[in-house]
Length: 322
Image 1 (cartoon, rainbow, N blue to C red):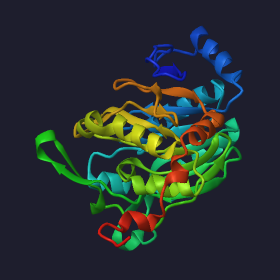
Image 2 (cartoon, rainbow, N blue to C red):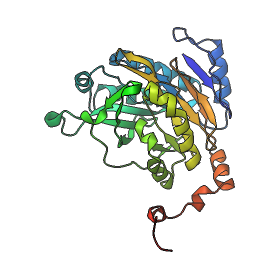
Image 3 (cartoon, rainbow, N blue to C red):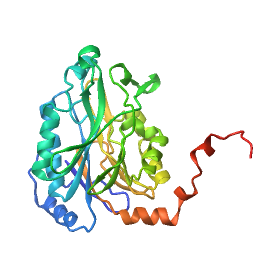
Image 4 (tube, rainbow, N blue to C red):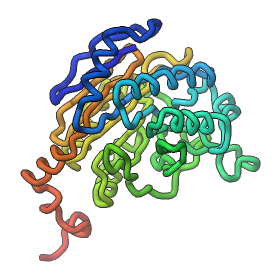
């Protein structure tokens, strides 16, 4: 397991813990430094989900426990944290409702540890499951009392064919697009605006969340290796720069099964576009990052981009009269 202690510059990945080790003295040192911070701490996690739901929960639970010990008040898990199936039928058969076993276990975990959770992409059975066997890709926020406080259902579905790059996914074949955005959620680290993976490519979404008061944007993801290598970091930094918000992006990494792998590089970016933490492209683990909202306010005050933004209608007025 990797635990990355983040500063204001890109933090090199440092092997503080091995995945198979018990927590040792190196980890205690991180714990002490992080817990003394005057700013709230978020944990941005990187996992390798498989079709084994029990193993996935065990791995994620361990990360959440480590994050809490490291001083985090909110923990971010990636898209597909519950599982990544090897076929459409397997994916559908393992799906659950919000009241099912998976989410119930996470609500209990949040309550036990008194920590907020961002569950970044849950395979939620649709409202008409019995008739159409279709699901939502749902981003769930759970507070420290174990209450579900927000559910955002992914609105942009990944239907992409890139034959030359080995990418072929059609999410809409079994997933229902969400019908609306969700207002940012007030959390211990600030107001969090919710997206999921492919939503990252649509700046209109991030700007809408900004207008509703978002201070932190989050894009839990399972980016393919090809698209991740080309676009992942540049898109996350662009979203941070244009909104002047923190951006937190938990990620899947490595091989999930013989048909699918993910890029990794769970990332945290500050409002100036500086990468605060990068989990790399090989191992599971987390980045512990301090969320200093004063830095956000300084950035927005010193470069008042949002005040300079014209009314939305202006950007649709090409060819219009003065």
